[in-house]
Length: 295
Image 1 (cartoon, rainbow, N blue to C red):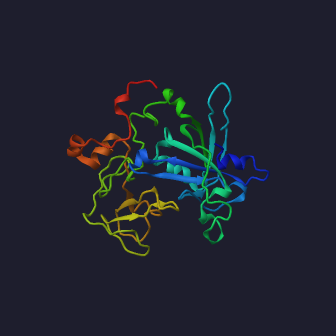
Image 2 (tube, helix red, strand yellow):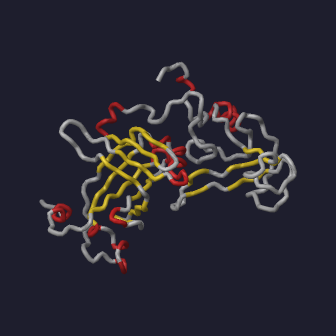
Image 3 (cartoon, helix red, strand yellow):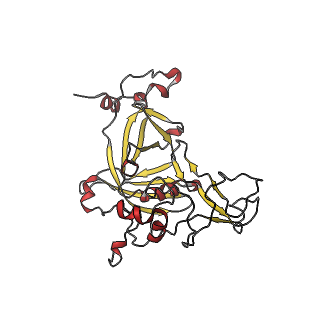
């Protein structure tokens, strides 16, 4: 039986073909968490709704989706990295290694009503699409101040995928400190990045406020950032004052010490404690048991 999507292909004047993309983040967030976007084909830079799901505009470049007779495709995808947006995402999500990437294609005439004037699609009530194409982030090939590029593979290639699906570094945690993903620490300041313990008041002064006077041992934080959907890009940073000042922790490093994790297993132990390690284990993002392995 011929479907509406195939009828549109052979129409003498088919509508514009749209590609919609999603990255499945649920393996790390333990919830149905997807990052959905489109590339702004044909100059369309607004959010697109299809089957009740919203795909935001995000500049990307893709190629290599075509099959040949000898092997499955290895598509390439390049993300805009202006303002280090993607670099911040990658710190939370293990460089996306092993994450699921989906391409869904449909024609403009099949999009949801909300994409059209008066919230009514004048072309069709059908929401047909081509079958979803599923891929896996295989490796990061480029990361700089303007672009992050990846090579994708098909699930067929999973037999030769690396396990675990992230960089194996025995002595350095890969999690972003204080992130809700991976690290999970949300307590008071503990130590600087060299594991030197910080001496601070038991109560903190809240978010840093310009012009306010702070004294030694006062604790403040500076808000992190979220994306347009409200998802955390990076968490708040915490600081301990070491001398009376009104200056911001970002501008006066002599009066403030940042609470930073050394990314070592000792830094993890300083924050979670022995009891937590024994009963629940540490959320250390390295692989200390692989020290003597040659990768």
